[in-house]
Length: 631
Image (cartoon, rainbow, N blue to C red; front, side):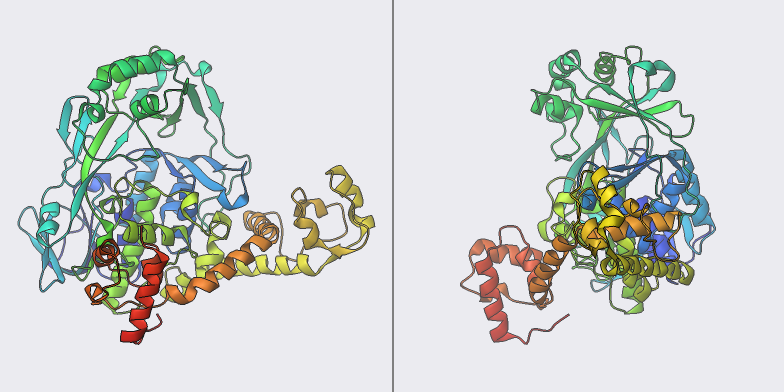
């Protein structure tokens, strides 16, 4: 632990995934940064699922990586199994996921932080010091004051956290870790609106009490690709996860004991994540399902502690154990730790700008579960953006604002600040209207320009990624401009049950066919451009070039849509705009505009319940009253 000074540029509060990203990127950008954690030994802890990535989340990890973040790079060092999900669907929603060694991940994070330019201090922040609605420092529980110009709050589930296990209640931020008190009350005193949310985690069970032969093993990809572009020689382990299934006895026992669940007894009044329901919710709300899958996942190499994915619960410990023992293969199971639900404070994210800076207090940024989100990847994405933008705030430079067609990270922030949330927000591919363009395979092409402009990556990494992008473009051009004759390819087409060609045509025309791929050119005399060989980069280049061609029609249509709405996206609405002066707006629309205070016409149009007619009225009034500036 490094001793803290009296003054820093930036103070990051919280050492979870959001805090780690925020602190590291701001330190790397040359800001004097202090990371304050209540427990330095818990920095980087993956407190729930032992995995990084997944549906839509894998895309965000790749985006974070291109923008100078570290989650994917750390995960690659700790991977127990690597797998691309959603392969039965189109390539735009393929999502990488890594099962990780949780203990090693924590160690890797802490070792990296210790060798960085970052300052780390163990302590508890209880309030934010402000002057004239501007951050000037933080106050610790021991009355110590630390001056700073910006604060990034990444408090996770620790703000007045309350754990529920049946009727048992524990004041805690996570199991075995004390909660944080004071920050909620401080922000409310500054005019912020807070709410309560709930999330949960399943039991951890002893490995030697499971009959593994009765489970169905699942393995990773035979030729995995890393989450980070900076990872070299990616050869992870391939440790299996095992699936088991609940049955009617399990369900009957759960229904008989719903009153022992904190969520069903009325003890928990806050909303939980709809898309990651508890086992009680699954059984009660989906009563026609005869069984539900439980995925048993190792938490580290040779782990004796197993994570029971799919059995998140707030049932009493006794009932949890009885229920699990009705599952074939788990009849003798024993707990290391029961599952639990946790309630915590969060702040409605409509109180933030699209930079994640507070609208009320200059220099105050919020990131992660404090904004109502759920998940490591959502936290990491927000932490990175908050760290970048707090740095830009101090440097008095333009912030990094990602649009919805730039990245899932842009979708995430836009959804949060415009739609608020009455349940923990989780990213899905369905939330992104431009998901055909937001592929995990093209994160570098979409975002490298921002890394160059904001100096988020070192020159060597930028050069490597720029070369990869150039080779991808060169390969696309080669395939579009190279012709192929019937005698060169018809035998291959017959084998893959594609109709033969009668005259020469461009190779790209063949690749647009659903079952034809670049590898099918192997038996022709058409070679690929120089520099495309059999390494990870080349596999990614070939895959992405192929995808660009196959999706070209859809992508071009989406680009046309984006161009049409771009003019509205960039029309600024003045911060002090008086919506009460527009008498033709409905009271409901006026109140929504006043509460959220959109920064642009594009944002205004995406507010829930706002009609096209409201936007037309707003545009007319702006044109009459103001000279609308372009961003």
